[in-house]
Image (cartoon, rainbow, N blue to C red; front, side, top):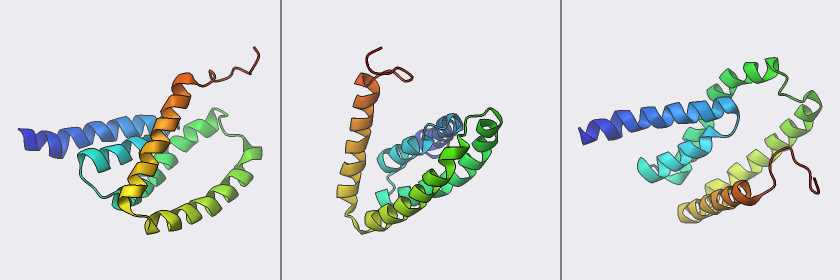
Length: 130
């Protein structure tokens, strides 16, 4: 029974959760990376590659709904795409050369900082001084 849970149930639950988060546009890939490296025992570099391949179809299925509902700012597309292409290539080159332990610590630190900001940062939509 335990093998069924670790081989089927947990991956399906993680897939469902990452799919929901991706549909919301909030980064289901982060959860996927945590699952793959922590629970599935996948090497950090391999998990990142899996995450990149996961992102493509997930983004393609969520994008039409966001576009239809006006949640895409067309004026921000070109600068964001250009910066994303340039920096994702540079970061991928850098990440493939880093030691897996250091990469895991950097990713963990990023999650801690992001979590603290979400807990204690300003509420979304509020401007300072209001």
